Image (cartoon, rainbow, N blue to C red):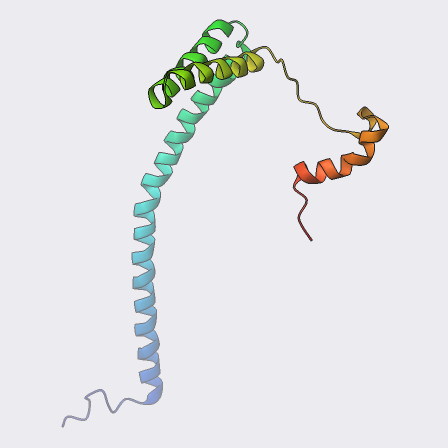
Length: 147
């Protein structure tokens, strides 16, 4: 028995060694977690950046098309009718395809030429009989929570 086998250390030195080993273990764990985080962060952030760039290009193209929609009205209405009608024709049959093409062409026409402007419900624009019903209509469509 040599007398310096580790069991003869005073309690303060043992506590310091315990704290040092705990700090080293925590640092090692944090280092591993940080490297794993950075390994995941870099590809994800580059994918988001790429998607953002492509999304902004697509959004700019959509805005340009929306501004020039009246110049390309026949193409928009015809293309909408052909795509919707063709899809429904293949999936549901001839009658559903023709009906779907007619409905989608009408909807595309109304969007291109602003046939149905958005109207807000207000008490000033309604006759007296509807003025009383306005709160209940707004509760139905406004989504008032049940009590």
